[in-house]
Length: 336
Image 1 (cartoon, rainbow, N blue to C red):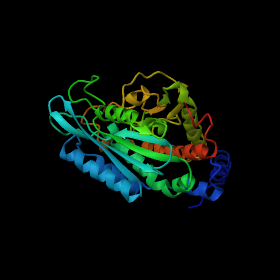
Image 2 (cartoon, rainbow, N blue to C red):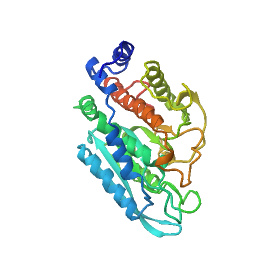
Image 3 (tube, rainbow, N blue to C red):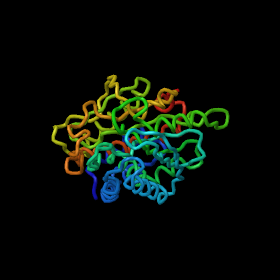
Image 4 (cartoon, one colour):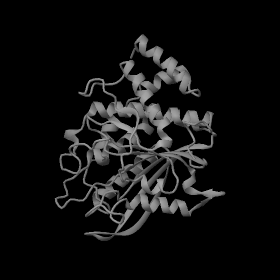
């Protein structure tokens, strides 16, 4: 495929400035690393009812584990039991995959893989959060050789965390929600690592939720990571100017906005944020109209929006890792 002159110049300038460890040829390849077949397959395998501790949940667990193991990632399971309304004591399983597992610091991408319980058992939660899970797997799948090259012999790693039990079974409360993230954050806070705690190995936690609608817009909701949100807007703007993004029915309106708003959303980041972890919460300002209805399925996804989000995030992940390898004390790397 031939790149336009404008697109070629864009990548030459953009990547020379942002991805110092990658040469120009690699930058051009990264721009074309879409693997729609892989993403579609991942989404299809996750897009089923998958309430915690059900057969559907176990099926999705096995798929996610298999995908990460096939990419050479180390996989850890955080399995535990907790009491939930309606069901009583049930098993929850958080899934953690790592590239460069012995590193002291990690960029953490995360999403919940469970679906909300409804008596009819038809809810598949496409935006909530099958698409985010499929995106995380696809980002690693498409960029794996580049990630491995950037992180080789470095003290930085990439971590994917798939939380179980984000959804409330009955009514959202401190005890009926965030089962997986509450357990894992507490566990890592209590686990020693060298002269610190396991939870301190997280440079920044990026949480994806409710991704896949056509009207999604994202802002900075945590002041100390606003530089990362600004980076997302810069990447999107440059891709758009290079005609590398698809139309999503809202003109040229950006998904990522360089502005701050306190969204006040309770999500899987909260247990980590309370323990001092820096958070980049990628959740739309306005929830999709299909939220917590059976219409949150594959039919109502905006695939161009997902394509654009995926492309921006793919570049963002490589940009972040390379920046932090080259300059660990950069204001775009460390937020402690």
